[in-house]
Every structure is written in C-alpha cells, then in structure tokens.
Length: 317
Image (cartoon, rainbow, N blue to C red; front, side, top):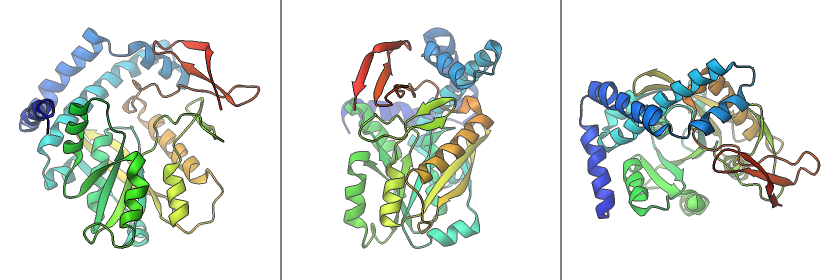
C-alpha cells in the first residue's frame, strides 16, 4: 500500500480494535454531530430528494427523516472502519443471514448473481456470501480517482472469501474462470445495483420512489446470458452495527422472462425495503441526475451540483 493508504488503514484499524460500545456509543455520535450540525453535509440535497420521493409527508416528517439519515451515515462511517479488524466469526455476527432451503438447492454447486443496494450498510452485504459454502464472492466496484482511498477500500473488502473486481472487468474475469471456478470454488457475482446509470442507448425508465429512474441492468443481462440465478439481499437493522439479511430469489436461471423483468423485480423489492426503513437508504447520493423529456423521451436534464434543476443542461442520446 502507498503511504497515504497505510495511514488511512491505521486510522481504521485503531477504531476497529476498540470495544463495540466505544465505536457506536462514542465515535458514532461524534461523527453524527459533525455531519449534522457542523458540516451540514449535503443537507439541501438530502431534503430535496426526500421531499420529492415522499410528497405525502409533512415538512416536519421530512426533517425527521433527514435527521435520522445523519445517524445512518455516521453508523456507516464507523462500520467502514471496523472492516479493518473483521474476523470470520465477527462477519457472521454483524450480518445474520437467512437463506431459505429451496434457494440453497438452486444455487448449490453453481455460479449466481447477487444483487444488493445502498439500503442499510452495503459494505456488510458481502458477508452474505459466507452462507454459501464453496463460493467466492466477487465484489464489483467502481475504482476511486484518489489512489490512497481506492487502495484502502480494496484492502478493507479483500479477504479469503471475497475478491473486489472493478465493474468494467467483472464479465472478463468471470469468463476467464467460468469453467473451473477460482481455486476450486464457484463464483457469487455481487453487484450493488441501485447506482446511477447514465442515459446511453435504448434506456428503460423504472418507476421508483415517485421518480422515473435509470438502473444498471448488468446483473440481469449476465444472468440471462449465462443462465445464472439472481438473488436479492433484503437488509434490516437489528442494533448498532448489527443487521439481518434475508435472501430472496428474483430469478431461478431457467425461467423465460421478458427484458427488464428481473431488474423490475429488484426495483420493486428495493422500494419496499426503503418504504419500511426510509432513513436507511443513501439519500446524500445524487440519485436522480437525469429524467426523460416528457415529449421525446430521449433528452435528459441533469441536476446541478447544488441541487437545482438546470433546464438548459441536456444530453442527447
């Protein structure tokens, strides 16, 4: 690792070795205070996206959700740092995974796609792979421009049970190891599928949280092409830094489905999870940068960085 990455790792490690009550009873409230009252981190963006997504809620309710979200964000910061000291048993403890028996039978001995989201703590979502013996979790990620931070996140995510792979190289890596697997293990292709997808080519807009929304469809495309099942992880918080993950099947790898069907199932389940715990999704991320032109459907308006709609900034297909 570079010097910068080592320094960041030592910071994370210093937090990871602390008792749980210090991590979430002292450090997490301090981070919350800094985000909420000092930095007021992306507050305008958070409030706008919450208001647009839940138009039926009052201003007081929206403000309450915004405040709760800062707690979620602070917990996420602490959880990320604890990755520097995660043992196998600790991983099984912080994410309690429930996998129905019939799903185990479907994926046994084969590769499959595993879709998660930014609802609750997504970095722990990779630990669901521990429930599937004989599988290596390939964690698709977008490399960061800052090399020190990119190195840090790579090493935080890397373990004998999971391998971070840049999203642009995931298909190539899978094809290279499809026949024999990786060190004798089959592959679990982990994708966080609720990120922004730029409007390129023949796009499909999904109804999601009162918006027309674009989603990455790579998971669906790979599953259909290679006949792989698609699983979804529904996470809920059960305590500070503790989560429960229920694994659901979106596609069995054999069903004949129309285009966009698998992604539509993902979107509907994700929306149900967010409505159940609305403050647990990543509202500080600019999720809706584009929307379809009401006339042509093929021009896209981007939100400005300050959260204001700029009608003249358009992008042609």
